Image 1: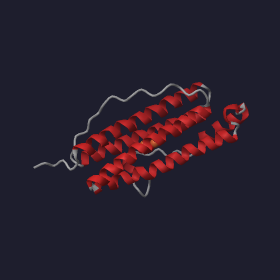
Image 2: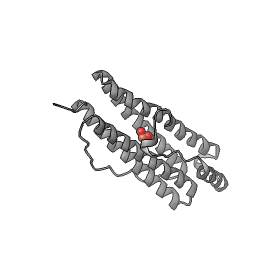
Image 3: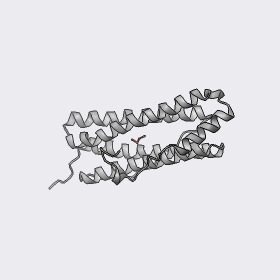
Image 4: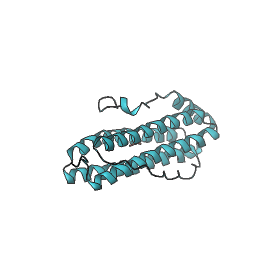
Length: 183
Ligand code: OFO
């Protein structure tokens, strides 16, 4: 009996999203390393914590594909883009990367809807909510840097921002402890 409950299209799509989440984690790691080397330890800490969140998202996709009886394909993770040129550029790129990810999730939601695969549609709703939160977080970062003076932000303003982000609550949790009620 065929125990695979995912179509080939959705199984390929979910596998590729799993790799995309791993790539998002690498992007945050690379921007975090850049921030630290520029002396922004607080921003680096924030970005490193977010890298863990993306890794947890990758695990959620992996667990779901396995749960539905389909095959997990672990593939090469694309290299992150070039280093940012400033803190504003870094936050701009974080927002763009989250928007790209949201669009990829929406495509999967549409695929699952078109197939009437309500289990997958339901699974993806957690990510729809998560992406809204992550885009908001990235927009808030951009607001903060704008208030600090944008590309011309002074050393003092960047120092304050760096300190604030160091203290920002750590939202990274293990994938298995995350639920729709406790994202
Ligand atoms: Fe940035 O979030 Fe994963 O999905």
